[in-house]
Structure formats: structure tokens, C-alpha cells
Length: 396
Image (spheres, rainbow, N blue to C red):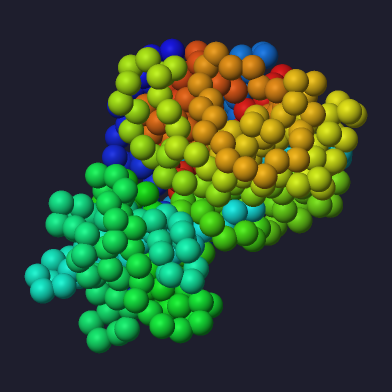
């Protein structure tokens, strides 16, 4: 496959800048409160074998449900088929089916500071802690040309958080030593208090991060800290959806895959076989393996939630289709044609052109049908990106 085969025009108006929400305004029309409903995004369903694409809700007879739009006086001003929402996802699964979730936890990785002497504004993006005792962190800096070995960075006007640049790792990468003398837990708490939600650039370049984003950009089942971006397909799951799954006997298997920035790195080669993904740490335990392998043995559905989860499970699947325990790293790059060894269903978002996430989605759904689904999404005003709408891919 070629990079150019995944190119399409995405209008800025269809890039979601926040999750679905209800806004409350004051008498002057100013927004005073937002109530977010992560499970009320739209859902499109792609059926791989039958080559069908579903957009609308249906009644028990299989007929499309018509939604009526009324004005303030109750008069019907429009009628149209009701779009599926993410809450409908449970209707495609039965007792004994298994969802594989990524329980990684996002930390507030983006900080803003100033360079000593010049007071130049610097963005520091925390990637991972290298050494607890020495307070060493692997980071990205922007603008990188201004940051050299020996420079000191200040993160509070009068506060104690100061870092020294001790190494250049890549063109934008640096190693920082934080000069903060206190117990590690206290240091980390103070460091994270200065950070904000690590939203992708296509959002942060259009609006600042807010306190709400630290909740919105986190799955409700996040547990193991280590991700610098969210496993975005899991953001749609609400406590209500999870409870319905429990009532219906749908199983939940949890793995940990610490999402890095590799998915957002631009691909610079036309031939996809020559692209190298950055590695991500994954941990798959015995409990998850037993749940998944049990479901497979009973010919139930195994649904991987998100591209990172798909990469992790495809790294750990054996040649006989069994999920194996795994503790290590993966740089697996999924793109079509590819035969999945484990999952027979997948939940994805609608991603940007030429992105590795789009390619992984097409690897599962098939190139032609996936690109048709994207064309349909563009036509019907679906929202793209981490806060956007969802795509359920079924192998039926």
C-alpha cells in the first residue's frame, strides 16, 4: 500500500474539538457550564463480509426510526432517520462476547515554562521518566532550536520547579534533570500539577486545554499511569454503557498499552512497508488471556477497543490464534493487507488523512470498505479525531 492511498480532504469544521456536550448559557448568551456526554457521539457500523455500512437506528421490524425536530412551539420543522449513537454499540454483542480494553492512564504531559535569562516561552512535553532518584525525564521541547545542553528552564514564576537540559536525544528530544529536592511522590505531584492534558496538536493549536480535558481525555477505566495520549476509542465508554454490558453478560478484559506519540508522527515514505513505528510498552496478563481465549473457544466475539489495543493483541497472539501473556514493547505497524489473528471485531474513531490509525482501521475493515465508510462519514457530517465519532467494525 502507498501513503497517497490514504489521502482525503478533511474540512476543519468536522474535526471535533471537544466531546458531545450540552451548553448552559446566561441571559446574555454566554456559556456558563458544559455537561459532557461521551457516549452520545455518533456510531457507524461497518460489516466486513456483507460489505454493508449502517448509519441509522432501526425498530424491531428492521425499519429506520424517524427523528422529528421541533421548534420552540413544538411544531415539527424537520424529519430524518435517527443516527446510531455510541450507546447502541451494545446491541451488536451478546452474552459471552469479550471487549478488550486498554487501561493505560494519561498523565498531564504538556508543560509551559521559560528559558533562563531570555524568558523565552518554552513548551515541554513529558514522554517518560528515566530515573526516579536523579529526576531524569525524556521530553520534547518546542521551539527546539532555542534549547541547548546546560540551559535551565523555569516552570513557575516564583516556584521551586526548575529543570536543566543535560542531553540532546533527537532534533526535538531532550533529557531534563529536574532540580527539586524532596521525596519522589511529592516531586511528581508538584510536576503534574503544572501540566495539562496532552491533547493532540490539531486541538491545542485551535483552543487551549481546560481542566475539563483532564477528565474528558481519560477513559473511565484508566488505571495504570504511563500514556502521553489517550486510547481514544475508549473515550466513548460511559459508566452507563459499561453497566449495560455487565447486565447483558458481556465480558471485559483489560490489558495495558502505554500510548505514545508514534501514532501522530507523520509518515514520510510513500511505500508503507518502509515506515517504522515508535515502540510502545504493553503488558498483557493471564486474566485477560483466559477471558479472550475462552471466548474464542466458544466462538464468541472478541472486540478490541482501539488501534493501540489492536497492535498490542496482534503482537501477543500466537499462530493458533491464542492470546499469550506479554510484558515488553511493540512497534507493530498495521496496514492493509493484513490478516488479524485474534479479534473479529474492533472499535475505532474516524482519524485524519494519512494517519497510522486510519491505516490500522483499514487493515481490519479492508481498504475499499473502510475508505467508503470515511467518504460516507464526510458526506454525513461525522466528527473526526480523538473527541469525534466512533466506528464499529464487525467481521460479518
